[in-house]
Amino acid sequence: MTKQVQDAYIVAAIRTPIGKAPRGTLKGVRPDDLLVHALRSLLAQVPKLDPSLIEDAVVGCAMPEAEQGANVARTALLLAGLPNSVGGVTVNRFCASGTTALAMAADRIRVGEADVMIAAGTESMSRVPMGGFNPSLNPDVFARDENLGIAFGMGITAEKVAERWNVSREDQDAFAFSSHQKAIRAREAGAFDSELAPIEFEQRTANLVSGEIEIEKLRLSSDEGPRADTSLEALAKLKPAFAARGSVTAGNSSQMSDGAGALLLASEKALKRLDLSPLARFVSFAVKGVPPEIMGIGPKEAVPVALAKAGLSLADIDWIELNEAFAAQALAVIRELKLNPELVNPLGGAIALGHPLGATGAIRAATLVHGLRRTNRKYGMVTMCVGTGMGAAAILERM
Image (cartoon, rainbow, N blue to C red; front, side):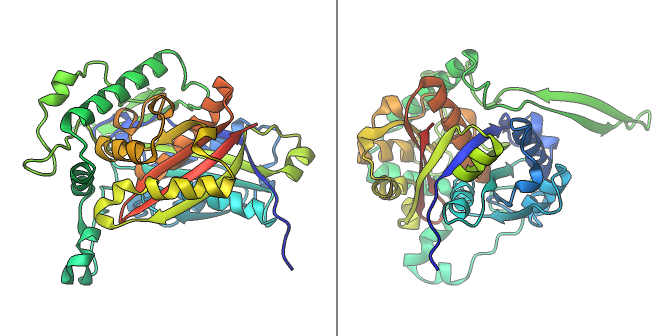
């Protein structure tokens, strides 16, 4: 028997501040603890909700091992004090893990299998390196030329996008500088305040002289990445990071980061029964594949599909959170899709704010939900490229 499709609504959205990796403030905080903090902060936004009514939690993580392994979703739920009845599953679509978690949670509601769900993401690049601790690609990746793109580092794929789409070094640096400037202005204006859950924690270190354990109380209340001291001149001096004669540098690439984000979703039936106020409606989601060696162009294929599923056009979209994995790929996507630059990352993007891989989709969705409401805009989109050659896009509607 076919179940009636119903809408899924976002009723709360929160994120931690994003810390710089591997030497930022959050370097000593476990990713499961980052998620615990996000979950507790999320539920604090809806005090009238009985947590036992939550059916399941879907959590994105791009490198689910070590401190963020062993089904970090379920572990964090229990540590956050949610009832044993609440399920949890960890999903991995690399940089789109958090967005995929949101789509999967929304789909459970939309097909009538659940009424209240959590979608989240967590990642500590300070604790778990890019690629994990023991990467081991299938030997067939190297056996045939057509598979080699699977093994390319993300920086090399950015170089290939820059070359194919003629994105100059000057344009990449200008884009990176603008990202920092927008993020700094947004932070100073308090634009992130409604989505941020400042985090406090203790850092313990051994004093080898006294033999005592010293405890330092730390607090992070804003993103560490945006740099007021950067300039076009400073960015221009940086050497290529991935190819000797390349144009992709540390300055025009996303920052390695630590962070977590979480959203609470509910059906219309649950909204009425539990007296919850919706912030946004989940409209559509799409993922499409592209050749792995040019993975950065992925949103070019995913965005039109997400729009078609929503019955919308680009002219309907008022806010676009395009993950800035690299300035080269972001600019190529903007040009290919003919996106309005004024609508793309109005508060800055991952080059300034950071990119904690599997958490980014949930984090940027929280930014989008609160941004749409603060500015009274209607439709917004979160989109990103994905390692091994994919693009993902999700569309939300302000309520």
